Image (cartoon, rainbow, N blue to C red; front, top):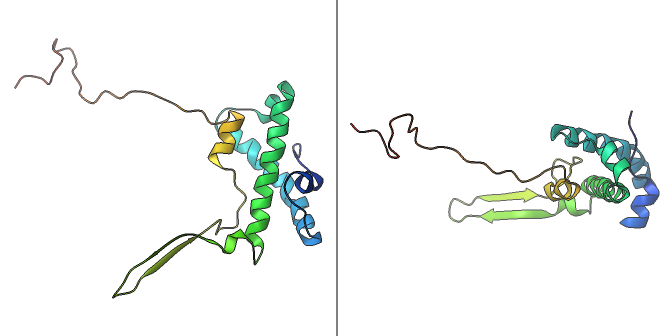
Length: 145
């Protein structure tokens, strides 16, 4: 088992106060969030532990991101929290249809793309794709027929 990047006290200091039940859940979620962040970074070829040891600022950013992910998961399980909030809704008429998307409906622990970008784990890529195969015909257009 790896290092846990944040504590329950960090959540209470940085984000919000927690009830006793939330503190127990957070205590269980913090090591899971830390492990998921390590796994996510590994998928992109980054080593979070090495990044933290190289730069203390990265360590502080990782602490905040892990705390935010845990609070999102805690809010998702709360009956009155943002998980019960509809983030997108559409309705139709006559044959009446309603469609709603709930914020974090799966109640899972996740990291936002912009959080991973802030850490330098995800980077923008660029490239090109040759649409026409011009081969060795000697011209720059489509082959003569």
